[in-house]
Picture: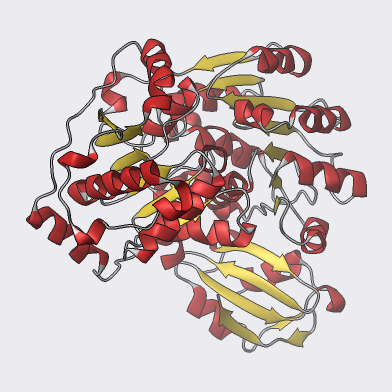
Length: 500
């Protein structure tokens, strides 16, 4: 098995991007998928979130993409908007040194802006099935050059009712594309899709070893009757019973005590309904706990900002429903809380599997009521062991003080993915665009005429109606900025500025 990305004979641009992004050695699924994908075989990949699956298909797609192409050569389908944004960012960073354009299309955002973006040069399009199909019907997404299709998180895609749209999209593509399908589970409906649309696929199934799972410590606390064992502390008093009843008040108090005891660095808190997400987030904020929430009824832009805020460390606790959170990858989650016990066996495994990754330790804490006992037994039969019931241990004054003090600590933001890239990149705006017949090739030619500048020093070029944006790589931004104050582009000296 190849252990280093250099062994795949990837282009220097892709290797350079992977090095900057910190990809040093392929994960299991990357080692299995990348060489097969580079042979342009159809693939069925079965693996869990956090296995490195996105890079497994993103690296071959970016390697195969050619900058000179004007219409997309690959289409990636994602079940949710959040996953679309996450996947687009990863592909963009991997293909950045090749100047690849990676538009994303999904509902909840103005379609007119997406249409304008798709009119420009694009290489790999990432989108949700509904919005992709909308663009196909409008004729705004070109399919005549598609060589690869990726169906990501296929089980969630079908659970959300996208089977018909996915089938329609595949039927519309007449170029006989290579198809890669990835899923955490392979059910009967997915098997039918594989049989109908994939051609002699190579099946890659990654079983996560105990070492890779890390050490997930599971704890289960029964809500009923535990209140008498709790300390009576004003910090935990709640009027939540006014909204959801007396047992919900008891549950909330237990949860907040456990949260204070654990005082996690970063955790996800799962609720069974959108309304419970709202209530829990509202209560925590009222009690002075910084947190964010995501579910399907929240405005799309707010959801994306919340996900980014959690990644950056602006708050430590993210409350979510299963469907919206599924597949979104967060690094270094120390804890997962099942505020509401899951209603499906696989859901329990998906939830707790977000912590304890890559050999690290994690803690998964579940609260159960009498009505959850049957599902608890079903989960135990599914995973093959008994979930450990724990006795409540009161929170010490020191633990309580440390928890509340931490709520008032100044936030230290984490580095964004791709931050190392940005250190050496300068983005310039140039006056002039499509209205003045400006083309990307004009920008490349002018910049390459500057001494010591080559095409590899130029990143993504975005030609708009009256402005053009260009990324200058390898720390040469100031050099290009100075030189372009006197050089002509399309016969004129242009105004050139540094921009974001």
